[in-house]
Image (cartoon, rainbow, N blue to C red; front, side):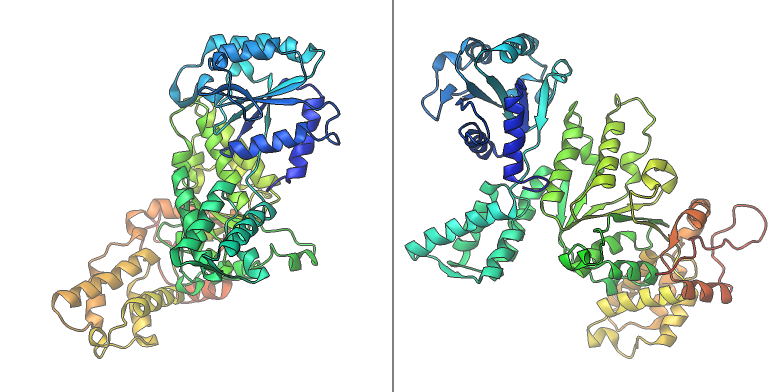
Length: 554
């Protein structure tokens, strides 16, 4: 388990049972695994002196003991609670899917059932024979009336050792049958097991089985199959998206200061970093002018560090069902920690955490924000958070203080040198056919000419200029030339004109609160050439807007 081991979970549960906690609530998709672990706790005399019988309940089977046929008369939840009340031997009662009676999926809570649960409290606490009730559900739904009576117990996803045990068992079974060729060294087995972190045991088993049947063998190449299966499973959550990015850090033009900062922290989550007493980096907040490469940087970190990239959609966290938003955030954090080391990308984070002072959602936004802040401050798992923001002013001050993120970077309009780099990246990426190239040559003279003409343009606009120039040549079925690029530039109105006031406001904020993503030497070149941003100043005076970003270099 991540966050806790199986032994830690067993000790916690045994202590709660011995202390006569009447109601425990375990939210997990792994119902069978949770029941198995609970059964191992209550039958282990080293953990609990008074061993107990285990009853499980579901609406389809009623109460059953040790997997035997259920009692028909206890299928109704009230009848099941009556049985609990009148049972006089030491026992644990595991009730499955009671969340549907607590108000799940928008349906009203069963007030009579909730009242019965509260009426049972004295009986459970004072019974001569110890009795406890454990609710096991895939969703955490907690009625207000029961908040003081239920104790939530986290049951984390399987650990590396648990998944590797399943893999070893499958390998052993298939080696005996001789139907599957196993070609794995010990270290390759570990890589396969680590690739499945973040899955339930059932999902991991399915992923390994798929890898075996696709080509009749299991080898290190099947890591990609496991990751693809994980990607499909994460998609089902609707909250986290597994991003497969082949974008290299070299494919992002400019921003060398930010790149150097990231390169220095590569592999800092490994054991070798512990010799230096270094903690795993928490993350970065990247703000600045829209279209200047913030999202590209987030995607390129995954390839540079060779870590999985998960994108968190803040809009999907806030679902319409009361109580489910908090559960969505909790499960997202649990999943991203389970596959750590990993990168969590939150794009346009201000859209999720703006307007926290509003009371229109009964405090849901504030509670989710509090959960996220606490996790950012106290997380011990190597999850690197990359948050991007366009409107930094709408973010709450608590998110920006030290301890949440390692650093806040400001991405400004590209300098002359950066625009040359951006043009070079997009031209080399697209101009690969000799017939399209013709006599056109990508050299410093051409790049400098185009960079001079695109003063005040953002990186996304530079990319579109390259695409527009190629369309111009394509429409006439000829090779490209410099005039195509110049025509595309003349037909483009840059963001620095259409959003001049917003850019000035962002720069004012970043000047004292953020580190410039562009290195000092490039900023010096920018000023020495007296490059004037095309966007007009906020006042009538003819004054050039200074480039924002605290002058710190890495």
